[in-house]
Image (cartoon, rainbow, N blue to C red):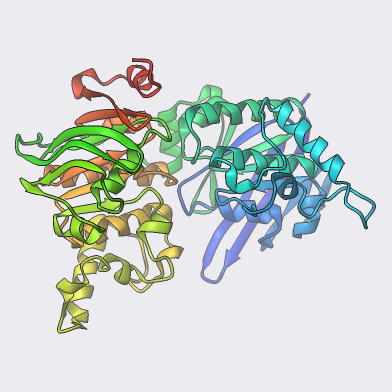
Length: 495
């Protein structure tokens, strides 16, 4: 029989002028993997912070292992066995793995730390996961996937009974995701309950048994995933039917070649050659580490090429900085929009005109009206949800942040736009909006280079796909031949 270990009853949380959670109720069973779903701003993070002690609920109760609480201070939450692994890792890169795992939880007599025990327990845990990780190595030597494992190990060492995973597969390869899922199943078999937050619905159906859906701070659905379709889940999440998840193209790419790359070597990549046409969405598929982002950094002149040629509209591009690429009409929406695409503590207006401020100034003086009119135009066109153009970008949802980056490059009149992982970390409704924007831009004659680790979205959006493997091209696939399994084999070096 199932054993309920967590029950939320009418949990609410209000901030000044905002009701982030409104009487949310659901339960969690021992050994269950429960999906917590919803668009950005639905209330997922607020709910998790109520469980870990970062937020104090305004009303409602949290029943945990038979005891009822009105709030859970952080120390109490940890002592009761709740641990969370967030998208941003809470690790010290220059310290050994073992010290990160036992930080604040060192075994010993209170005076002397039992380092030998720490090493043994850490090694046993990694061996149990089927991984060969040296606990004495610094965290900085690990891949993002292994950092994720260290975070989970740290949580388990705290005798966690409820583990919260927030977008755990965002930085992982397919093989690394398989390792994570194996660990989750092992924890589940040991009775650990897991709350799993992800925008990747295919993962949700694979690893979770049940889902709770939030929208605008309220619970709008709770379902058995074995009896629910992807289409129904999306409808509940966004509150409307998506008849075409991937919008249809209205125009075909022209025959005009706008970029030609020949024998390009640089940034760890071997010789690559390709051409792209006006109005084309050219996809770049591959596994993590295939060299796609590295290639885009060379095309954007952020990293110097070693050899080969790049021509844009027949003119050679031999730039030494992104300024030269921008002048040639190339724009770049980076994979990490927060670190490389935006100045988070600045306003929407500041970010939108950042790459094109000369258009709105004369003799070094900015024409504020001209700038604001332009920013408002792009915000209206891309339907950026904000109460004010002066709002700091850090307070926007992931989808709206991505739209601000798009607006920045539209303002710069980029003819060739590089979208690197354009939907990473954003919800299903915002993904659809980003797809619509990309297809609309291509229909208007813009040329798009689209890097994505999600083969499904490349198949749904791109006109043609180049598959990369270990720094070189594994092949080009035309739209009529799109096939996920075939391209996965190419990306793995099997064809």
